[in-house]
Length: 287
Image (tube, rainbow, N blue to C red; front, side, top):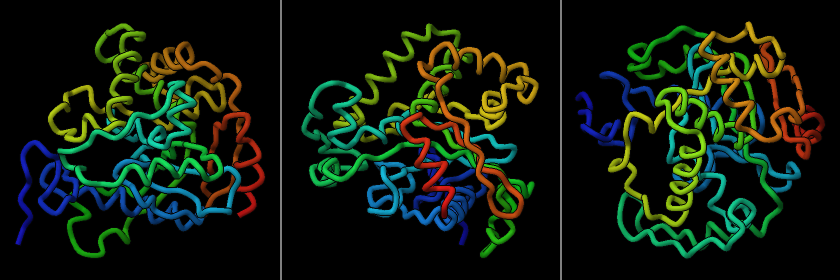
């Protein structure tokens, strides 16, 4: 029996994401499987409020966490309610907002009843490096091509671009400003307010607040233009996004460029915070 699309949720009743009449969650799940095997990572135990993957305890110092974004031509999609994922631990919240994380207020919505008091105290473990991994799909398969059982065996993964969580945040701001014409400082203030309310659980029912600007693209070709300083690698619109990003993102010029060989002739390109250079160039490369 075919699954019925649930209007307004972007999901089928069993939780699978849908493209137009098709289950597109296959792409994301296969990307998680591929990257987790490649870097010996595990799915985050609290994946609905934390990034997709994290390295096992004691494997890296600091631990490495990935929020994965995958797509054809290296185009991923950022979602506003995922921006808070890197701040749900007490220590991470303190470092960004300079205050203690408030007690969770989530008593209703789709995440009601979860024990965030236990989760937030994971800040006692060694630090975590939060990064986005944008992985290119190179198979050319469209959503309708993965509706059948075992169809994910067709999927092929190409180059990866890894950037800090801050890069993803300012990329979101740059894209939103570019699309709406809004003031960048106002967008930053709006998003930071959203992050704080999401951390304490005031916005648990995300479906009630989604609008056309809740999703913003992140392009590996923009990242590669920054990585190589060859601005012809991206489009004219991409160059505008990159210009905004460079103006918004403090420290972007200090990011360390690291290239690591991947499987089947692919490349892994990293723009790393200076304090994480050895994490990627020595620890991750050594796998």
